[in-house]
Length: 353
Image (cartoon, rainbow, N blue to C red; front, top):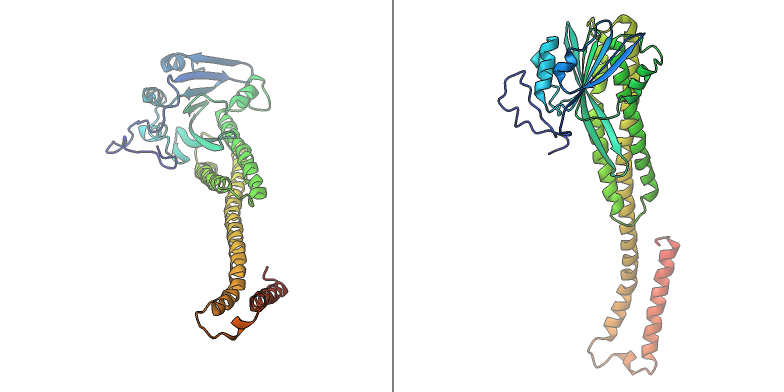
């Protein structure tokens, strides 16, 4: 399956609002969990079914419902019916080829985002779609697979670090998106260090360096496609008239635009860097070829007059005066050596080599 564009054959001809999973199935069984908390207490539990989880949603608490594995669209449908979420908003969740986007409704906000991971051993970027549904005191997160993207946010809740236990679900949404943006910068730094290290290898006389340059160009372009649309999303979220996000917490969402700008600027810098490295590598390669051609041209230039002299004395005429001289052969060799020496001196003087 193509990395830059997911196949949409399953969605061909489908009605708007149809929940169709498009992408690679990354886990066998869907897992659901609930983390409910307020300033005084916390409740955390994994469940075997979404029905059981929904019966344990707690009033007077911030309820974080997490779904790992979005291939089971029945779970998404049940959540939609439970919280009265439009199928038009839900249809983006199982479609892993979506760009980051926002869907607003008076009672909820749906956010489609991307999580990015750089595997240093394989030198490869992987992208996972993570979606959020933000309601009053409830946030629902959908992940393609079980991961540790938000484990430190869970630890902040468990240990009551900062104001997260005193704030609402909108502040939790900020914390989760902030975690994704921090992860962008961390992974950009990792792939960036790999790209920067290539600058010292541009003179390597092998095919590996060119392969790596084009590989990183593809990976950084894939990275860019995943994260660049997130900035307009955060800007729209700030300007939104939704009542789901309180004015008190709106200032935190404004901080997300700064992180988006940092990620955007960093990725543009690395794209420019990789293009410059490719140009420098091609220039070095051309210079090496030109150096070889220059040496060969000099040798050819030296031997052209010598070949002429040898050709004159190799003509088949009976009367060539020099042929009667006892030392004519040595005179001819001396003339050749003199011509070659004069030409080499001339090339050196003009710094042609």
